[in-house]
Image 1: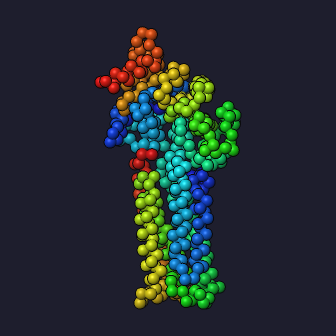
Image 2: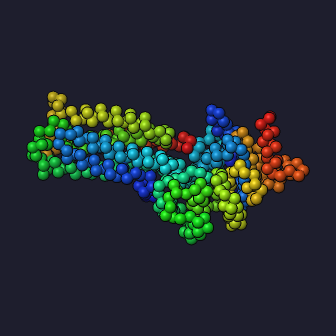
Length: 240
Length: 217
């Protein structure tokens, strides 16, 4: 079942343009959103969350248009961005105590569990966290309100290989509980490890939005890894 | 709505926003332009906005499960809350000066504005200008603070200058009434200040919601 749909999204900047971006995210699947730096991943994600105002297109979550059901939809979404830290000098405990009140579905038990799993200290401030730990803090908040879909902008950047592996395992665990995970990355091995579907964006346009297997069947040459396929496709597009 | 106000007060605000409320007590100062008290209260709010910008507050707020326009509402509620706190101090000081200290010599010989209900109305007008120019201007970008604040400083300085000197204009001496003299006029001017505050804040709020909906964060 489609849990989120992006249709014909368009946004024009002076030096960059998102063109006709369309794809859907299915329940209980991990969707990797791949593209090189500057391909339009963050603009797409921000448009999906109404942080960027698109010039055209439609965003729907749970069958509802985002524009007219913003608050209700946001309650069912978890969002995390890799490197930004909020309120760098406030204690994690204080940030969480405020945020949790916005969600009727806040799960304190899950919060404690992820807090232990991520080895985060509630008495620390975001300023005291490494980049990787900041990602985990954002994830902690996203995971603690029983979000039905997680939208994660480069969650694996800045993470060490162990934490990355741990995170990808958490994605798989969440998927088993019916949660849809949509994460952007420029690291193809992340996709190889856990993605069910691949949405590939290049120069502001969706090149392909397919299940991983269909993607490799359609685009990979014999003996080619996913990384090699995407590199070859990207080079081809640069020369086009 | 309580949640977003709580978030503004506990996460977004700077301690200076609260401390600068005390400048409302400048209404007790003789020989000093007391309406500067209202200006300093808004200066504290401005400091809070700088603090919030460093903390990526606006994007954080926009990601909370509320409508984008509720982010704007939260900021306006918080600003009006701080202004109301400042106003309570100013009103209390004005009432003390109008009653217990009505005949105190330093106040009677004061060349500047007397702390009466008209002065409280003047403070309301100053807050209204802050909400219109600074707060409304801020939501055009949700980032730029300087231009709006400088424009507000100019508008506030001119307004405060005119209001402080108004009673020296022949025929307008009554606005500087002491105690409960000309209480009808004082009340009328207070209500005019309140009306100006409400109109300016409401106009600003509506435009801010419109602008904030359109901008990219």
